[in-house]
Image (cartoon, rainbow, N blue to C red; front, top):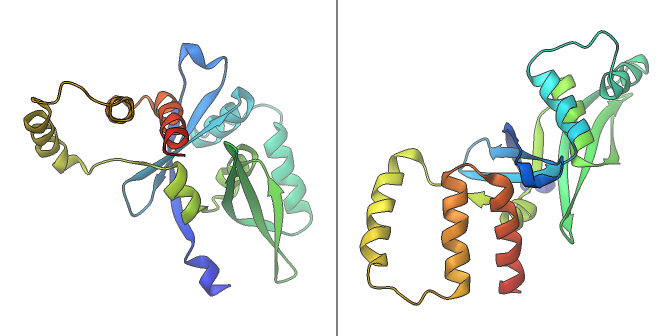
Length: 197
């Protein structure tokens, strides 16, 4: 179990993002707690609302589905210990809700959106498999390096007229990250990984 923990990267919720072209979907942005990688996960509007309400400390007059689930879990004298986004297959993220019952840790398969909606209600930490983060994460530069990086990009980019399609996509990806358009960044990242094969 200890070796398994080395593959777990702690993540914080950075925020939720949407765009008119998303068809009602949101991008939930997770940020590496001790690093500079971000992980956008496309989720539905209902789950986005469930996460946002809890983050904003807004209590609806009657329990919503995830509040009901929390109360149900508590009624069995147990609680959610952590959430683990453990896999990514064909563009779909997979997660586990890890809870404790009678001093035993039990893993329950879940969609990341539901798992995170529960995690925020239990104040439980969110982890992602390091391989999933390597595959789908978007690396951002620390703030103090941004200006330096921009200058070196300008100097190096002046003579390059014929950028390959891959290089163009990588430029678009960088721009999407800088403007915090994570939904677009996630789509570009997927196109780049398909091109790299």
